[in-house]
Structure formats: structure tokens, C-alpha cells
Picture: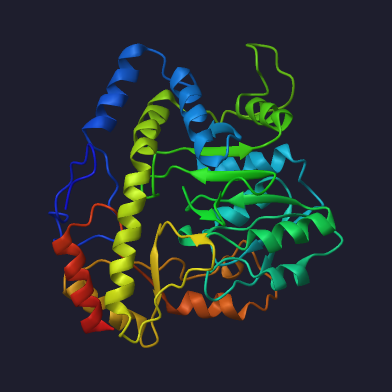
Length: 372
């Protein structure tokens, strides 16, 4: 199996010998890009950030792109720029990373949790419809694990109710639905460049918008409210991306198509080889292009025993997410989310990342067949 361009990784982590569930790539190309920027002396929100924004725009149908320092910042700034704040409610999934709901709270609004579709793990439009109330200002669907949410239904719901749509695409770089890229459906799309994502920038985020006025507001918000030095127009914060991160992100963006096809090819092998097990392999909705940030199966038996057997065979696994957001201490309430609860109790992520060797992938298959 050919290596990714610039790839420099061992076949397994030398400290444990385990095939990891994620393996961030920091190769010679990323190192060279970072060194080049450090030697240039322009290291914060300079030409590399501008170039990264232009290049990322090509992946989201030419939308305006605003780079920030994290995916959480992207969500928070998108909500702020759209005027969502105290007194507003935002419909979100509980089956997600806490940042989805945290961003809503950080702008002073309140998350309202809706249940998920059991196949895609994304928001169920019927549950969203039932969750919309008089204070609802926005919908915040998550393209979880790299599978697009049901955007046609959700955007129609939003239009009928006068709501904004902010896409949490932090796990779905390059995913599409009916040929349209995620991050181009809502008023804003938000991406993360954390090291374990499908592409990274060491750390960082991106907001994608169609409205140039909204893009300008986002640029002000990320930079202390300034477009020109010492000409503060609004109250903003320091949420800028560094040029080192942007330079790494540009390298990663260039290799994303190849890396995505490797993920999808690995997922196809797992689909085929695990079809006869008792596991439920992840289905893909019609028209959806899944990019497999995670390859998530459902375990019908005892999950801890299943994962223990994998670990004994040298195969890593993970559970995303064992505790739904609505069960975390900051989010008390009486929520009826049966599909969310069921998913949290059953899901296991298996290695699918693009740096898997053929031998590692075969080991994953053998171990899962034995354990599942």
C-alpha cells in the first residue's frame, strides 16, 4: 500500500504495539511548511491564513472562509455573527461532542436537544420538528462521524420557521449530500482542524458563509473587532489562526482527497468483511458521501468485553460518545432521547484512518470477527 505524500509514521505505535483508532499525520511536508513560516517572521493571521482561506473555499462551493483558532471558536463566532444570544434556543443533538452545545451556551443561548436518526447518528428531522418552539432561533445539525445530516429536510424546516442553520461539519471535511458539500447548506458551516480530524492544522477551525457581510463580521469578531489596526468597530475577541497552523492546514488540505479515498476504501473493506458478524455496520444514506472520520459499529453484546478482546489482539478502539451531552452536569433537564441513549450504549469506533497498512487492516478484520 502506497504511503500518503509526506507520510512518516510507523506501522503501529511503538510504545504499545496497538493499531490505533486514530493516527495524526505530521510528515516532512508539514514540518517544512511550519519552518518556512517561522523563518518568514509573519506568524499570525498573515499570508498563509489568507491562502488557506482561499484554498479551503474551493471545497465548499466558493463560500467565504474565515479561519479561527479552533472548531469550537468557529461555532461560537458563527452563532454570534448571526445574532443568536440570550433568550434564544438552538436545536442540537445530544449525541455529539460537548462543544456543539457549549458553543450555544457560550453565546448566552440555550441548547434544546433533539433525538437522532439511528442509521446516520445525525439529527432526526421529525425530532427536530417537535423540538422547535417560540424561542427557537437556529438549528445546529452535526455531520457526525463524517456522515452528512439530512440537510434537505432540515433546511426546509428552518425556512418554514424562519430559523438560521449552522452546520457543525467539524468531523466531515469533504463529505457531500447529493453532490453538494457540507458546509454549504446553512447560513454558516463550521469545521475543526484538531489533529485527529480528517485533516488538521495542528489546531484551528474555519467558518464558511455565503454572505460577504456576514464574512466581514466574522473577521471583525475574531480580531478584537478590528479590520484596520486600532479602528475597533465592534466588540471582538482574539480567536485568530496562526500562520504556522494555516501552513500545515494547506499541506493537509492538499492531501485530503487522497486521504479521504483511503478512508473510504478501508471502510469498504470493513463493510464487506464484517457483514457476516453480529455487529451492525454503519449504513450510508442515499445520496450521501460518507468520509468516515470514524467507522462506527453497534455492538449487540457486552461492549467492554468486545473492546477488551480487540485490545488483546492489538487493535485499538474508542467510544464516541459514551455520555450524551444531556446527561452531563452542565445540561440538566428531562429529555426523552431513546435513540441517543441506545447509540451511546452500543457504539464502538474501529480503525479506518488512511495510514492503516494492509497488514493492519487485515489484523483489524481478524480481531473484530473473533470478538464480534
